[in-house]
Structures are given as structure tokens and as C-alpha cells.
Amino acid sequence: MAVVDITHKTARCASPAVGSVLAHKGQQTKAAIVDAALGLATQIGLEGLSIGALAEVMRMSKSGVFAHFGSREELQISVIREYYTRFEEEVFYPALEHSKGMPRLKALFKNWMNRTSVEIDSGCLFISGAVEFDDRPGPVRDALAGSVKTWLAAMHRAVVQTKEAGHLRRDVDEQQMSFEIHGLILALHYEARFLKTPGSVSRANTGFANILARYGSAPTV
Image (cartoon, rainbow, N blue to C red):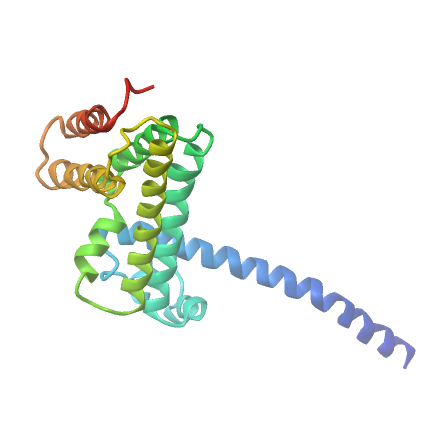
């Protein structure tokens, strides 16, 4: 009996550790699946994602992939969240190292342009997703639109701070300026990715410089 009791107690003590290891492994597997799904989505779009296609890429069973998400819709939403997390890490957070005002606004645009230049080849989930889900209400559209709105709100806040720092004219319409900056990125994707127009990146940078010159209160820093 003593041996049985000791074994039972040991098993009980080990269970939390084993559970933790299994949970960690499960998280790693899910992260790997989301990473693969993001790669597929940038090529074939969110709508093209399927449990079956992903299972084939991951060399897993469909049920194995399904178990991590529960539905194709939740898979799509997970991909959107991961895309936005990476977007923040590459574009938003590095810009916070710059002081509020023109330095931060210029850093945001520069980082955004750097990412956009890469996505000319790989594709932008925000733009392709907008085409796929613009007239399709539901959780996937909500997640996608929410991510875009959060980013545009951050850009707008940077414009407002630039005005508050005295780097823009007092009569500047912050919403209008933010709209024009966003428009440059959309035009760049269309011109460079779809039309393959040479010099599109340079024109987008020139457009941003023109916006700053038009709205600036003094020579930009």
C-alpha cells in the first residue's frame, strides 16, 4: 500500500508540470499554424484559407488543425490578430522611440513605407481583406476593420501631437491630413503591386514631403 500511495502522490505532483509542458507545446503548435496561415493568407487571401489547405502545409490532420481553432472563422481572426501584432512591432513601437511631433510622425510614415515596400511582393492583409470583406458583415470583417481603425487612430493621434507641438499650422484639419497620408499608402499598393508602375515608392515619399510642406508651420525637422 505504501508503494501505491507514494506512486499516486508522485503522479499527482507531476501532473501540473506535465500539463504545463503540454500546454506550452500546444501554444507553440498553434503559433506555428497561425504563422503558416498568415503566409498563405498574404498569397491567396483570407477567404482562400481553409483547414484542409493548412493541414496539408503543416503536415497535420484536419482534425488536429481544427482542434486549435474550432472553426475556419476563428482561424481567420487569429491570422488577422497576428498580422496586426507584427504590424505594430515593425511600424508603431519603433516610432515611439522618437519624440512626439514631427520626428515621430515621420518615423511612423517611414516604418509604414518600409513595410509596404516589402508587401508589394507579399501582399497586404489589410488591403486584400478589405476587398474580400467590405460587403460581408460578421466577426472576420469586424476583426479586420477593428485592426485598421486602431492603426489609423494611432496615425491620427501622431498628427494631432505634431500640431500640438507647433510643427503644423494651427488651422490644419488633422483628419484631412491623416486621410491624405493613408491615401498615399493605398495608391502605392495599387500602383506598385497591381500596375507595376516604376518609381511608385519614390512618388509616395515625395507625396508625403509635399503634405508636410503644405501643412507645416516651419521647415520640417
